[in-house]
Picture 1 (cartoon, rainbow, N blue to C red):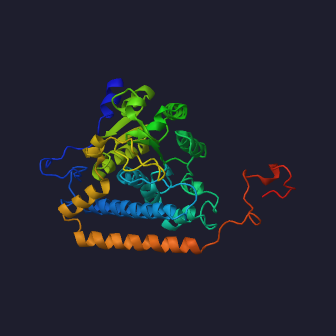
Picture 2: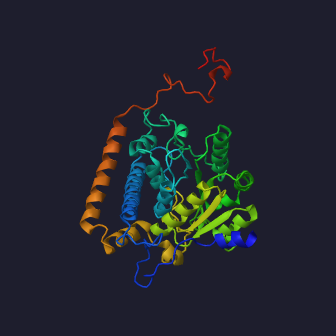
Picture 3: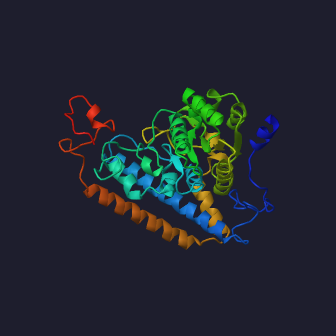
Length: 371
């Protein structure tokens, strides 16, 4: 069992027979290339790219609005991590559960969040999912399986595990859950306790860890001593998977998609670790001066969006002119969403009926009226 688990902890990507001529991003997954008898894979790849592009443009806009004092609080962007994020969401199906993290704009959009909902949250619109009470990344729609993020590192694993156990108790099988996590979160007790429980319960859970080399400003060498975080899977008795280059969209789609299939087939929790470099600070307030130049110049530090665009043109999936049209269309979408959200009302404390707990009669001094 131990040897089998260790073997599965290796990258699940199929070897590309054209490795000598392929660009760093290669779509030779499931034994076929996008131009060779796999039109479905081609369309899936282009769909993933469009979500990545929309996420990048929208987050750049939010960062600009923050600098213009149009957004209160902070802005945390996923620049360079979009391939991992979108691959996680696209591995899920209707009815599944997704718990994104602060750099998952691409995954949020691909999972079904509207661009307008995201923009409303940042701009404090009362019509958004948080009704203007939260300024950035804690949005969600739990009834739809889209969990609102808890800031405490590692906390969302137990939330998704609880949702999966609840569905099991209701006799509603078939759904899987996915949780996004940074490598810093794997050092927390919440991570350990929740993953251990998920392993014991054999839950259909995929935990995607993005190792972006820094937990805020702390380098990985000061976070953990193991050579590969996927090795931790062995200790929990679960399957582990490695993505060597998290900026490679095809590798992300292959490995994360394969892990989701394993979870759905009843093989228990899956731990996926993807290596990448965060292309910016922890948030827009952080200048990332601590990031080593050698990492910035490395293959790990290459921008996933640029690699994906190069591959699309190189393989003839779309022309450079088409990419420019998609970019312009995405920018227009973002501007329209911002304009709409800015016209909408802000929350009004005098009329707000929101309650911290679901049963209002339990609130001291509420005066009856149970919903």
